[in-house]
Image (tube, rainbow over all chains, first blue to last red; front, side):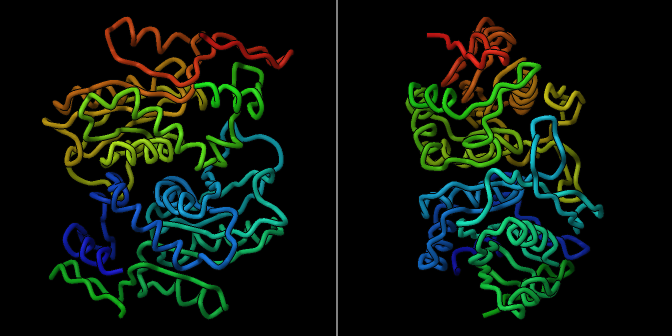
Length: 192
Length: 192
């Protein structure tokens, strides 16, 4: 997606440790008119899949998933990262390692909102090692729902998570795939 | 907002301790076509205020704020609840007490995304004691931006936060205002 690559080059900040900050439009401030285009692009990728539910994970995935869900005309479910007083009853729970925070956390979805008959598209902001996506995939499997694919806004290909999922036969679409970044020179190389 | 009251009555679950669970359309599964109507309603309440930024707090506020921001054609900024590796540099930070979790956490907004010249509408899912809103209001004040008002989807009037803010002269709009709830009888009484 050319306008996304342009935006990453213009507004992205590369930090040491292979961290790409896109806080000006995706992860802190969210450029909603721009995200509308992102939502349409995900719709184009998966429009023939009869998606009836978008699954994402708090927090950065939510706005993206909302704009995609709008295009599909379906609800979204966002997985929660910790057990709160307000989640009760039967849940799917899977552990996920966080690259950003260097910790492991539990990912939770209420059984009420995911199950047989659902055709699920997983949406997230970043696809790096694929840890968060793998957690969500586990939950979809456990629920008996059908996973139609995964969409990420930005994939860091050098961390391998996306290609591992593709090798497993999964339909993975990333709207910008970064092959390499260099925080010293500030350069970003995209996959064609 | 009549369709919202109807939805709360049909799908809301009242739990002990004055907790209203609306996980089927607002706090876990999100009914995006319905939230589009919520976004339009907030736009109607504040359309003459030249809003150029929506401010909310992760996670439950994000989808609502996204649908409102879409109506205003402006970006949203979501305040974060903890310091992560990915937030660096100058930040606004204010402590907020959580009614749901029984803890105090730091609410953070990067100075880059809020400041003089901004006309800010704060959006959140619930308005109870007003703790989260008060934290966001503090941050808007500190930033030098203009606060045009606050919008909540559901206000629990019996916890007093909304009326306290109104008494201070703030423009507060809640789309459904609950005067009382009873978890034993399952009844909910709305303000007219």
